[in-house]
Length: 144
Length: 435
Image 1: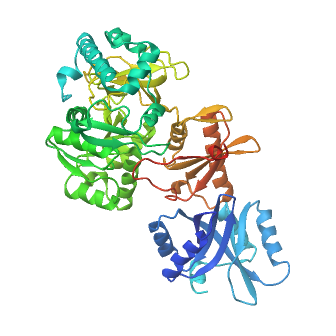
Image 2 (image 1 turned 90 degrees about the vertical axis):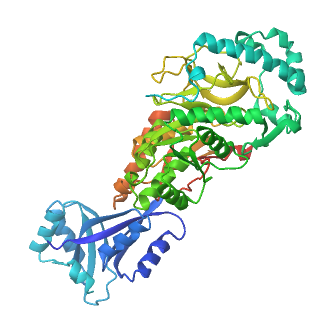
């Protein structure tokens, strides 16, 4: 299995909330590899992939943040037209329901990496492997 | 084995108690009529003379006193003794208007301490105990009341006052406090802090807590009992009658025994003032029959509750009052429906949320709005927005089922709602600002 752990943090929909989370991450010298912020009128959910998941979770929990860790799929695909569509077709063909996706803060000019959140992760992972899609491991991400 | 501070009074027969109350009431009415012009005028206006009051059955003939009277008579208008005989004052917080100032003679302080000693004894306290008083000291009656009771029992008293929670916990551990006295919201906060500091209730010697001065629910009791590893006892009182100790809970935990040798309770219809039979919900009214300096007759507490003379397993015969279901001035009327914060609190705890919440009421386009901010439960946190929104909706439905009106529920971060070290502010009613 090459699943990657994603950290989610609950933040209030008020000024300085994301700043507070990022400040902790800075103080711990942790590097964020991928980040997305989902928002509602009341609260936001910060989702991120970092280079040291355990340390980040420990620090955030110690600061009383509500934190949850979920397994997600991370893929790397060529940076050319139609590539994401191909990935979605592979998942769709296996009836995998996509909850959300977001991109890595990558810097390669030849490929682009995505975080994909699905409910049936085993099925999704297998379909992607069969479809020849490169999946990233936590080690790959730590070395990015 | 149940322990009593004053068995003769606490377990007196109904006949003996009534006889004592009758004697004291007759004497008290005369004392008030002779010394308090404000009340004498009220009695004269109603055409009642002290001679008309021959016993408790005549109580209903006396005029009521309300908070408004206390404000009118501020500061000395209801004083029944010369200031030279008074030794102390206490005051209400004044959050709902002008302060109320109450005066005490030494006998009044002794009587009050005695009431608190009964409460501490009923909670299992003896001279072997270490009583940590984390109610505020000062004008507020909480601190000095339990402090005096603890002295009387002979317990080792830690006069901590409220605040500085980590120091509270350190003293609790180092000095082996066995009984904690504070507001229930502060007890809940201490419980949370203990958990955060990595301390288990087993590391503490606490066995009981005496909590009062604000409304709290049965669910909150259970959660405090669990977090501190104690049995939690309710205590009732009001500055106008002396302070905490007017009524106290026993091991049965099904309501509070009223110290009716000092305070005669009645339940009235808050609209008509008519006395209601035992077992009916209404406004609680107290007549102080032993207080010398500030003896309020038929004082309307605004607390809604019910009285019961059902036999209690603890052996006390003192009449019991149920936990007040709210104050008639705490009650909000939202879209025509009566809403008490305690109802909302009950739902929150049942649904696994912390009892820290903020109710905001406003009026938008002539319609009342009810917004409730609730600290989300970290155990139920999901990375999916739809899951979190479902939690908000489910909670709104549960509250709607309880209240009959639809609230808007807002989940906020854990610990983001300000904790209180005294009485918690749980309601902001912005409609009043528009009047």
